View 1 (cartoon, one colour):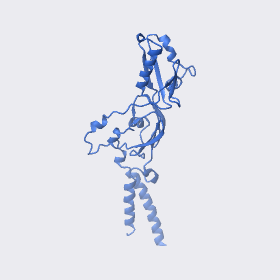
View 2 (tube, one colour):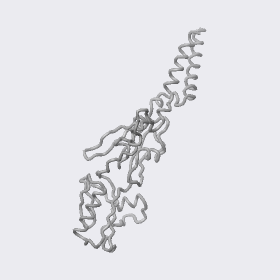
View 3 (tube, helix red, strand yellow):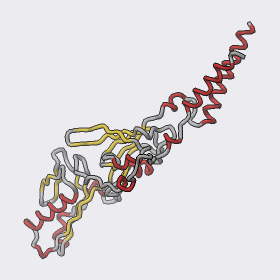
View 4 (cartoon, helix red, strand yellow):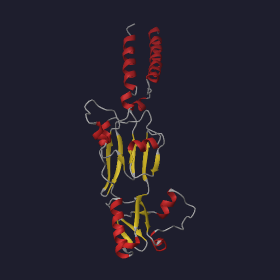
Length: 264
């Protein structure tokens, strides 16, 4: 009988510590101290500033569409390309010097500018060097989608692209099949590119304050890593039933071994 108590203690400790709790699985939990939830949810993010390797889609429209065709190249490299492939051939990549190459205009530096600032800069230059005010120059500048890579405890790991001007990390995760039950939502790692290099950031997606984080919105070329919870490496199960089954099996094996030893 005296052997039962250590087993019961072991059973309770392992079962409680190995289960994945509801708090570890619930996104954006509101704390009692959150007195102004609306203010958190409405905070605007700083506009994205272009980095090296960003891909831009630029189109110019005027009353004289025939002449403006020199600014809107259509690649002959792959005439059958569609969607993302077409953007790859016809888009404008920010090179290592922070420039894009536009037909007739040559090198244009865009590093550190927002897409709106690039649009205004191109419109001013076109009106100054190529068109008159009556031409009604209309320039559209957009990021060719927001590309990110997500790996780890996620339903669909790999590179994804979303054709939006702004994408939250919650949308990126949902687009990739959601974090698995063994994924750590409290410490999501984001590796982000900057002009000086890459930096590692962390965000806790179980707290509502995450919406106030500068890393809540995905930036182009972000690498998002979802690390596993300790429960996965322990191998005792992630739910209460799995843990009880595993621990019961271990206890049964130990009890049988002790009984055999005491009878010898």
